[in-house]
Length: 296
Length: 296
Image (cartoon, rainbow over all chains, first blue to last red; front, side, top):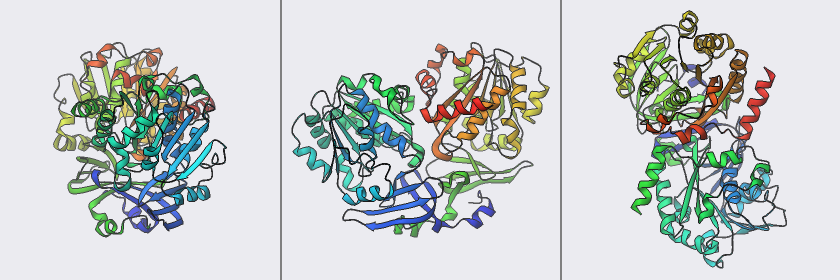
């Protein structure tokens, strides 16, 4: 396109950029890179760690950007703290996926947590995070933390009823291996493992460009027997559209105001105020979720 | 980068993409294009209108994306309605910039408005919008609307004291011509033209990658004599980082809850709930604004 400053186009060297197309939106996101720190074929996927110019290190799986050093705090805080601050006593927490350990670290900031289990399919993701994102892994040696490398769906299916208070699904997009983490069969098992009082939280994609996916997640949660759900919105500059969501599901606890401890967490994005504000959805999103859930 | 799916890279044809670098963030945003509808050198700038694959038509000025058909509603609603719903009686409204007429349309949704003046430097922008974005211009024939093509800074400097109830600054980024729309001299003139009871609202860039600019805007507003200010955050997928802000300035009216009419506006992003929620800033942004304003 002629839109570009010719001088910039002259300097633009695509080989120095990480470029991620979002085909369903006809959009592209790129980050200027300085170095490839890791390039590995694991038994499950293509794993890369790149050093970028202004977003710190980034982890990439099969070409999709998973996290950047600069903005992952928003995602991790918003996936973990609303769920843990809604539950009156989150003692036992299960993270499905989340191999970078960023969720695990946020979970362990809560004193009430007695046991936090992270079930990641691909051990290489965690090993790469230990090496290149040590801050995200700083709680891995906490005696309450337990790292399991296994299939999350099988882990939940095998877990006893009422075994956990909170389940956090920190998955990749609903394609390939991860698609089964977005359906009612898996959500039903989560419901069984959480019992009546537990809270499930799942990353639920972009309210702008994946509104149908988000709406589908809400419908599947409802079909799986979760009586209540709430979607929270937040910015995530390095994900497609820069706008992301998390969805809580459970009983009345989903609508509980955050516990006072929420204010004492050492967070940069989350706060008690944000907890309430993030739940306010714009009319076009609220309307789509109403329609979608009605259809289920 | 090797991160990309080789098959996609094979198909990727840069000439079919609008690509906008955000150099200060080492980031790139792109939209797949189908056609160049307009490519014009106006007396002021390089103006283009492109047809994209999934974001509708987009307007580009000097290589910077100004609006897309798909997501401009968020920006226009969030720039206009919080200001107009805070003011008890917004009868006289001035829009500085905003040549696409999207703000003007939102302003005229308010029955209380008796006169709405849009002062845009570049008439060609408005003519292009009339032709390619007719929905944004649908209120241009409203008898309350007045289109002026002139320098906004001179217009404000020449306006009598207390001439307007609300001033909306819908400007480009603070570089080149537009930089003077971000300083205390201009804000001081706005304060004079608004009087004690008026409200100014300015687009105030990305809370993630332009936090220093946003902080500087707050400091300049304070230096110009505005006793109170409030920044609102919202998503804007097609702008750098996908996360944007507007800042209100004025007297106590800035903190007023929105008038009940807010709930009856035919909006897709804005609502009374969003009005309050958008004002809740994450701790890292709130902290930066506190520090910045203290320095002024």
